[in-house]
Length: 359
Ligand SMILES: *Cc1c(COP(=O)(O)O)cnc(C)c1O
Image 1 (cartoon, rainbow, N blue to C red):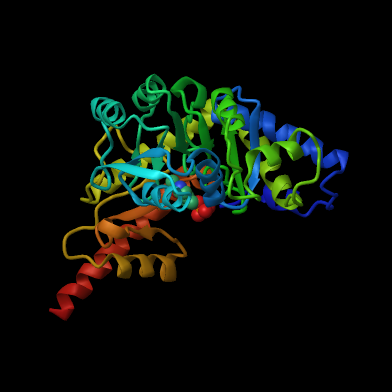
Image 2: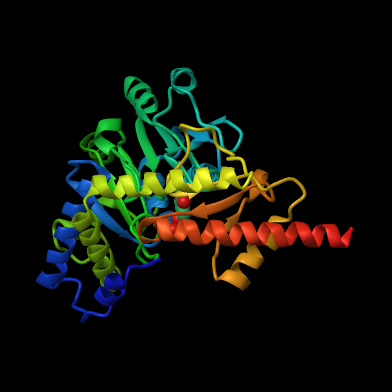
């Protein structure tokens, strides 16, 4: 859900992309983003486009043609990183796990020490599975091998600690429409000094002109025209970040955690089991397994038609096997959890009653 104050902010008068007010808004966005990312990185700015634009920025600037790019693959979005890296001409090597599982520190170290890549990528919060991948061991091993680390923080930013600096992440990106509770259209990104230095040593130009970080820095820092930034979306993110500042980061994370725990315990009372093991679960994206014999699409349709609640299903290897329930930003409330649980209980009962009738 988008907060009413964000809608209001988007209706403010448009200024030009070189207007001092535009740069003031950008400066404030950068300051707030550093706090939410948990970083002191100078290079922290909003990329125009959705989360995938942030992903493509990270990959296009840092996965160079012919160089080895090691990807931890345990869900849909790590597959997308592989595809983007292949298109850049990088040599992609993969370590795979079933969707819903995460990589142990030992597995991470062994993979990186064996492959000796130039760049490593993993997804911190895998929205397709509901699993959280810790990054400390990955980053440590990567830095020992002189590799940079890209972390997809699309779903975590604004809903859980991302901890870019404490984890050792070099390049992180996110989006506006998940933990920040804004409309889709902006992808906040941040780059470590180490990664920035590596970028300076590139001999070939970045294939994407639009997502070339050096050119983007020329605009965000040097105030030179690059492309016309989507100012209404910047107003939205500016306001979304102000809401986070007012709530307090710790309080916001605690709210997401509390509502997640409440949801899990209520789902378990309904007899559902969580797909991801305790301790690896995301707070903002919950994946209970679909009970045996239940058609998840029918349950979801009933929730939408009769209760106006939209939850998603699984896809890929998890198609028909899990529900995906988002509790992100403004949507993570106790009231929403109660509403959903009540509706889900009725929808599941109606489905099994119908199943019995059909038999
Ligand atoms: C949503 C998502 C993306 C892609 O973001 P878009 O805004 O859909 O382009 C990438 N990675 C993860 C983990 C996501 O959840």
